[in-house]
Image (cartoon, rainbow, N blue to C red):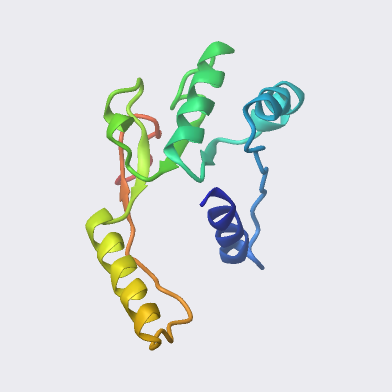
Length: 140
C-alpha cells in the first residue's frame, strides 16, 4: 500500500512544483536516511507522509533532535489511525471512510468473481483532519 500511495503522490504532483523525498520502507534504511538527510529535511516547513506510522516516526525523530512540531515543522499523515489522538502532538491526517472502502472492495471482488469487473479505477473521498501537528495558518 505504501508503494501505491507514493506512486499516486508522484502522479498527482506531476507538473507541479514540489520536492519529494522518498523515505525507505525498511526501518534500518530509514534510520540511516534520517541521519544522512536531516539537514535537507530541515529545509522544509511541512511534511506529508504516506501513512500515520511514518508521520509519527518523523515527529519522534524531529523531537529527538530538539525540534518542535508544529512550530519548527508541520507533519501530516494518512489513515487517521486510532493512535493519531494518542501521540504528542496529536497527528493531523488524511481520513477516508474505512467502511466505504471495505464495501467497495467487496463489490469489486463480487464483480471479479462474476466476471463483470470493468472498473479502471476507484476514487474515494478524503478529508483533512486538522490536529496539533500542523501550524495554524490563516483560517485553519
